[in-house]
Length: 216
Ligand SMILES: [Zn+2]
Image (cartoon, rainbow, N blue to C red):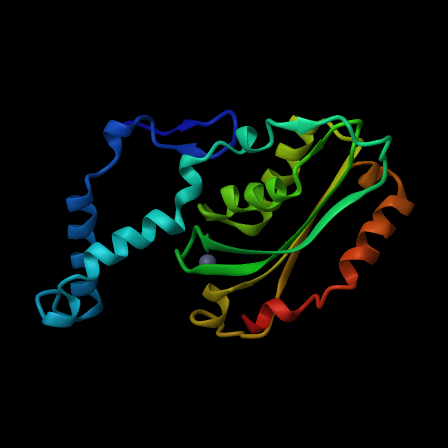
């Protein structure tokens, strides 16, 4: 096994090359092993197509590995009529997967920046969240990745990112605590240094129902 290299764009461990990637058949065989490990019989009728479905699901769950977050933000606009106020996209629902248990983390992201003459299309902020969510994650790392990428590519005056999420590894196993949300944040530039900017961001985000994520 060759060791993974650090992807300098995302900081994530990517496979060294595509030759290391197992084939679809190998992935389906692995699912059959897990079905047997769970105590079931992969040869019974109801489970015959399950390995193929699981592998196709993984292609959706982990689509972020094929995306370059920097590219998502590459196209910027400078004709903003002197607009220099905070831009906030709040309540971006995301579905991610805990890298320790491979079960869902479901929540919402609030992403803001103070532009420095350049802005991106607002949907790009949602796509940026998805590019990092659709991977195996821990919430702290995902929060930092979103904020740092926005900061590196747009070079704005400041960036604020808050994630609120329910972790199924806490609700369906382990301590079995449902109804709790984990909140993480990363503030850069003016969001870190200027209390009034940070307050404005928190006030905008606070208008959303902060803990509704625990009902997803
Ligand atoms: Zn977990």
